Image 1 (spheres, rainbow, N blue to C red):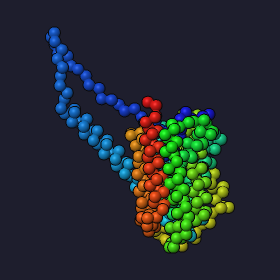
Image 2 (cartoon, one colour):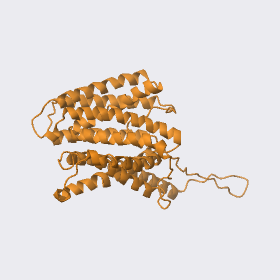
Image 3 (cartoon, rainbow, N blue to C red):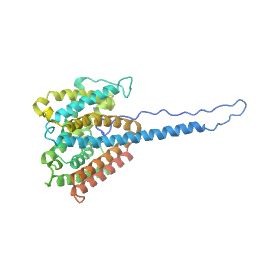
Image 4 (cartoon, rainbow, N blue to C red):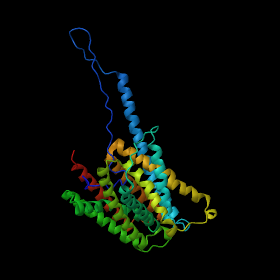
Length: 361
């Protein structure tokens, strides 16, 4: 089974959700008795109600976008704080399993008829197993990348998802891109290469704010795995006729259970009474509040405003995370990684613009 279109690397689990059709407001004409049909002017109160509804919907969408951006920034910095600590640095798989467990519970609650956020649709275990395994590797490698890298480098490397997905789609599925879009991928790769070089250089200061060789390996391995997962999500959407929430509700419990078989041989747990209160608060924020807000807001944004708006939000999040990472890490403005990042962002924006113009109506 081949995906009918290029997988969108901006949204891994909530990428291909189609926007639901909106209910249109129909106006009717009233007939007067007699030979002539009179055209009645629209009711001013109805127009005002419609304007209030539209402005209210726009405000609600903006709030969800803001919530999605803040939650994503929060989860990245929270993860970095947790994984920089010796207490949680070697419990990566436990965090991933806990996150999937919480996500599965949230989606089950949202699918209940009383809430009706989406309709639950179950797939066969063996059919969902490969996608769940890819999801686990995707999350785990990202966590390891964040643990051994600086925040700016971690986020810049995620930009490589776009050219990697395009390359895999070309070689495996013979999906081609417009020539101008291919040209736009070049500055992305060059920019990430520059950022990698300057971040890999040794810097004085806190080790948690530097990028090690392991961080580079995990970052690029994570990009490859994330790209494959992105493409598989598009394939599964078409093969099983499920939207992103339905797919994720199948993957999350399987992924959580799979990791439980590996955790005893890989993870090292801290002594519970030695973990300070703020450590447990960060854990709750990571897989609790932030994860729930991200899942809900991403789904709402794509449903209400489409994938284009979600892509724009993704660019805003990338710029925000890297900028804050530089500020927190004390990077100089003249750092070569800054130039590389700006080059990569310019390429990804150009690529997105070209693909939107060439997208069939």
